[in-house]
Image (cartoon, rainbow, N blue to C red; front, side):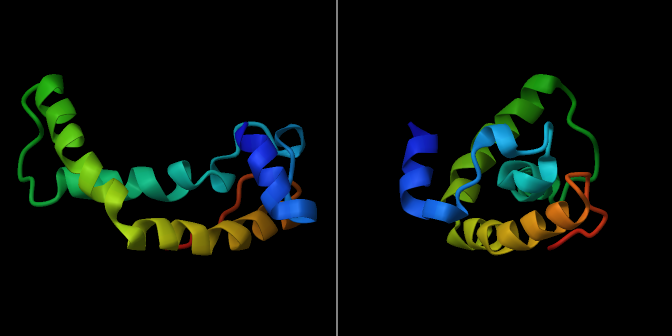
Length: 101
């Protein structure tokens, strides 16, 4: 369903999932931006590690909705998307060294 939507919206710019490099975190906004932003929020102002896994999970659950709503986070990830794709293509599908922030 998502693939069909993107194919219709993007036309010739759409790259079908079979054409993407396997395990390509440089091409996935969740991998290259959102998880870093989430981690920053979860550990912001922490001076000691979480005492339990449950405490860490609760913090992630607390932070997730606010971070998900932030337009700036999505905009940054989207702004980086095509730059990253070009770099991956230049690097023949291999992991890129350049990190965008």
